[in-house]
Picture (spheres, rainbow, N blue to C red):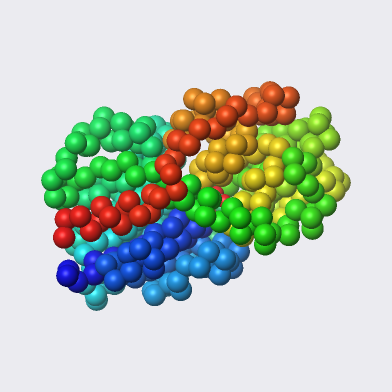
Length: 384
Ligand code: UD1
Ligand code: UDP
């Protein structure tokens, strides 16, 4: 029998910690003894409610290595991560490095590993917003083109890679110069299905806010383009207050730390007091994952600029207004379950109004069967 595959998994930002739960479950379960996973946390996210809560709730093993890089400019933060990951890759022997998504932690892992000739496995490969003003677009393209295995959650992602010269029919041994593209489904779908019942049993957030099923809209905003640009932040908050007033609809906003700072510094005083004066607009700290699933499952409407939250809305059949000009999850818009509203108050109001009147169309299972993580582990072991 082969020695176990030595896998270094790099995580750092909230969604990556959550995604890691799916692979860690597979490694501890059906792949026990065949894959040995070491978890490296870059420390990109570090507040307890942006990091530790997910380890506690989702049964993810404690990180073996914590680089503790913290916040900083893109260059400074990414450089610290590359240095720390490179040191670990030189200190211990790894057969592969597993990376999630499109954050600075993803980019750092790709650069460090590929330059040391250690194969990279990229989960959520092939996603494109076709908007290089987004730091995430740069990160995901650089990571895809440094990868040996490209694990795509959707057919669209496979097609995007094909357009960039990848050959999805390559079934030979995976190599950085002959990478293997695999449509494996979405690990986020795995997690949403896996934790849905636990969330229903454990989460007490909704009753604590005096809210019940279909009785509120869930809102998250954290993209730098929305939070850091005062005109856009004010336009979005103005649209949210108007949505609340027009439909007498409570809003729940778990506020990302970046957004909290920008609300404190950039929000128009009139809007700030409008928020304060409306007791049914609930600004709460970032939620744990179980609370978040409960919030998504019971919402009447989701309004978000998050990649993960727009998809989870789809998983739970909830209509979604996307606060972005475009999305890499084009299937959601194509199916009519989500609309793109950017930071435009008129489009936000019209999109919300239509969904509040008509609800969401059916949401077919476009993101796999809940077993993406097992498929990824199987592929990683295939060439050994
Ligand atoms: C990052 C990712 C983004 C992802 C998001 C998930 C990049 C370029 N961006 O954005 O793709 O959607 O994570 O949430 O990697 N902060 C805290 N405490 C924390 C973490 C952050 O206070 O635990 C504050 C700091 O002021 C920091 C700011 O939030 O400067 C932004 O954090 P950062 O990790 O740089 O980017 P995100 O906006 O979180
Ligand atoms: N999430 C969470 N608590 C929150 C907001 C989001 O647990 O307060 C979860 C959400 O359910 C999803 C993931 O975090 O699984 C999405 O991360 P985020 O919105 O930070 O980033 P993105 O997906 O846009 O990169």
